[in-house]
Image 1: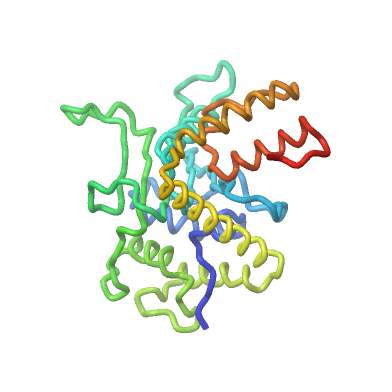
Image 2 (image 1 turned 60 degrees about the vertical axis):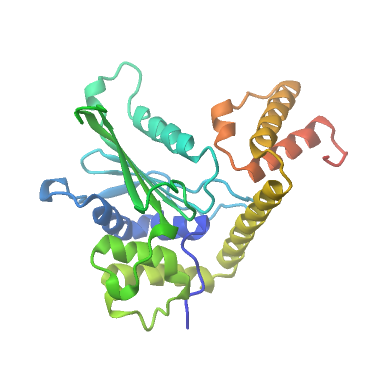
Length: 298
């Protein structure tokens, strides 16, 4: 029987890679991406924001990323994005910067900073002008290619561009990308030979647990529905000629006004700009209800 659980859905992705008892899966995935030398191997990995069962059923598209640190002090931020909105590039860089600068306390020496590596899997195309599905960004001098520092690395994987068949899989990274694209249609009891590795079997077993626990399955289906609703909303907006950027700007302005009216700490425009449109709408509606209790939000 096919798995029926899509690891691209953020809840499933966090369940798979963000649990403290699943660190071996995350290490294997990171090794397939980084291909480290023996002295750079990840021997231990601590998940800094592990999966928690305290996820609200009414959450929509909040970001369920995975932050981790290895024995060498390197920081990792791994996430899956089902929708590639216009601000995703800026948001990835912003969160890389937060993880990187978050290593230091006041007065600490900059030499203590360790490399920070962001990995973003995207279920839509972000860079249509290139065919490559894996793009790695670094800090280098434009003309000479001299590296400023090795502390920054951002990997983008555009899953729609990965088109290898199961027979064509040649590397561990190929296998993981195929898994992320196709796991929901695979049968855990009849994996293709190329997929039948200890790590992929463990990943399949981890995802099977979602379907076996009613509450987790309910949350998973809710998150999947939220993604579909958001995609439909974006498509409707585009077809009607609505400016999504303008809509986002109006919502952000509304939220900041409502927060001032309520005397609440102001959320920065950068943080608001990183939120999905559905999350902005939900926040604006909640604040409006607080300003006008007992009245339905418009």
